[in-house]
Picture (cartoon, rainbow, N blue to C red):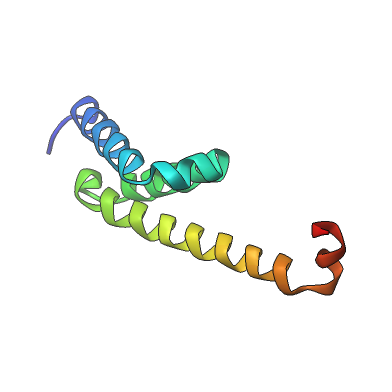
Length: 87
């Protein structure tokens, strides 16, 4: 098994690549975007090979983030309570 520092460097590179592939989502809500990636990274560290599972975990978290944003927009658009704020 690689040492922790080598794996951290690999994970950093993977995170940068994932960020680059999702620039729009990151700009939309950077705080939640970072939380999703941090959670994926923490879960990856619970495995024997975090550098192999991080990409899939991160993509899953980001898909859920996109779905959450879509749901929130739909609620704002369709809810009478929020329509008065949009006007």
